[in-house]
Length: 82
Image: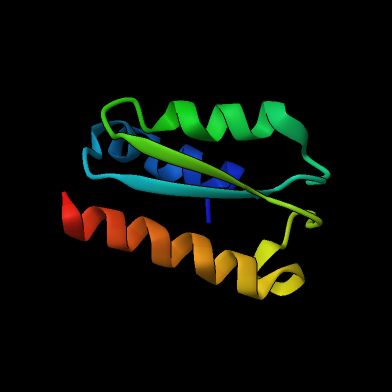
């Protein structure tokens, strides 16, 4: 999970992170798309996959566990094939 505190403490490390990263967000996230864009920009050297989970807010794993698990499983399977 990336929070404002995480960015303050680990922002430079996230910029250096180069492995593929999966970013999940609910289509109705109260923080909005701007928040999501800022999170994606932290991974400047990492390829990122962004998945919007339908019918979910900020807590995608609690609100849409099956869709969240499916997105994670697809991401890991894609990485295994790479």
